[in-house]
Image (cartoon, rainbow, N blue to C red):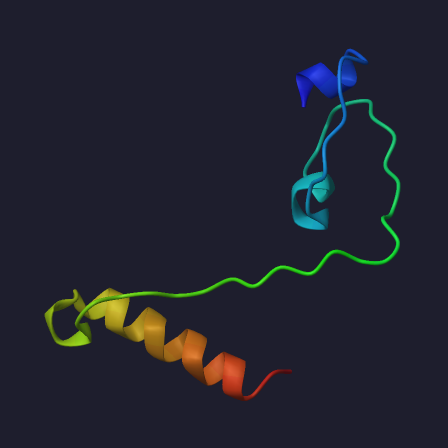
Length: 67
């Protein structure tokens, strides 16, 4: 971000990153929108820590029933 702030480059960033940005930069939306797929991968759920199991269950449930 500091390189962008110093007019030394450009970048494509998600809105979440830009919402927390304190740099003095200009933002432009890209048309058409850029879409990315985010995946969750694990080898064997039975050997994962309990917090990881709950996280996986939460993500799967949230994906199946979006708001």
